[in-house]
Length: 476
Image 1 (cartoon, one colour):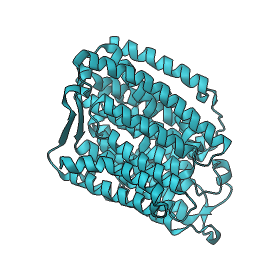
Image 2 (cartoon, rainbow, N blue to C red; image 1 turned 60 degrees about the vertical axis):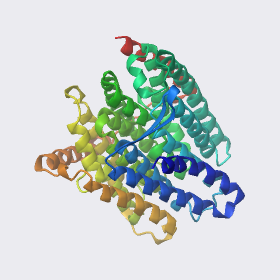
Image 3 (tube, one colour; image 1 turned 180 degrees about the vertical axis):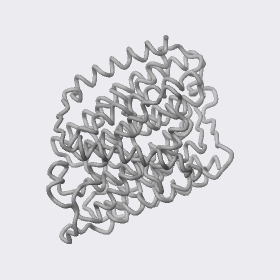
Image 4 (cartoon, rainbow, N blue to C red; image 1 turned 90 degrees about the vertical axis):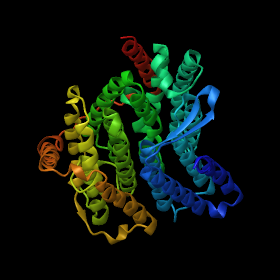
């Protein structure tokens, strides 16, 4: 199994470079890699014994693959496969598929790391591959958005690297568990890097512009799996070091509220989804012990939503309210919106119940985040619709949507214990209250939130502010 694990980690990079030699096989090689990852994740999920690989014993460079990892790997598998299938009949070049499979491999590598050095390498490769995909259209706008993302990412990783070196200085090891006895500044620096990479709290205000301005398949990849490469280590550290758990939970709650606040008032469909990526990452962090299942459901639903919204006639919600959209697309939007709102019979319901049951008493504000989610996605549920034959889509698009929504239905059985009368009534009341609030209040509100805070200089300022806050928290 150890040999298989190493081969599975190396295979995407080998296939990525092979695409340049055999460009006619680009889509097939990508899809085969996603299938291999799916098989590997399924095997790990049902295995009772986690796998631990010691690569460099003297440096604490280890890999750990367990059920938490399997949820994230399975998310990466399904989202990558859906994106490849959706692009099957498009004019995407071999370069696009090569970067997609390299991104897939580096994200998988981040999901099995249990040490800061190998995680650093994986996150840097993720940053480069993401930049190349964001800038793929080669327009002035896409190149600027990509460079902005790359600059923010690299600055954050410089702080992270210094923190990792401080951990090694304290323990002669890069292992995550070294945070327990490392200097407080090591924790602050490492967490700053991970919070920025994961799009958490005000450190994540780079995310809405980046995800909303990227091409639709790239937005699906970024929101579905890429940002989770920064979230997964936070969960792992919170589970290993008890003192870190409340810090992670606090940032989770703050992130959920910040993201949903912006999403409720925004009128741009892709920006609404991007802000909800920020918010839903907060739900993952708010209950680290069950964050893996929530990450899976969020990855599936958010990728589906980005693919669907990318095929709407407009991104402006006000314009969409004045013209009907194609009924099959509306129906798929409704299913995805129901899941992320916590409606029964879809995986989002069980995931949200599981998170709410694992919250600490002081995290009651997460109920407001759940209400805001229902308000936000009412914008899509109450759009007018009709049969418009001229808007028929290519088969690859619908196969991708069926894969993602089918995954949400299938994953509903993971936590079947959620189906008690009390558990069903509470989310239904929350959703109903959110819909009423939207129909009678928020639908008619016109509030333009300033985008000044998303500018590059302000993002650098927020990074400095977060570092000060982190230093205060760890020293306190």
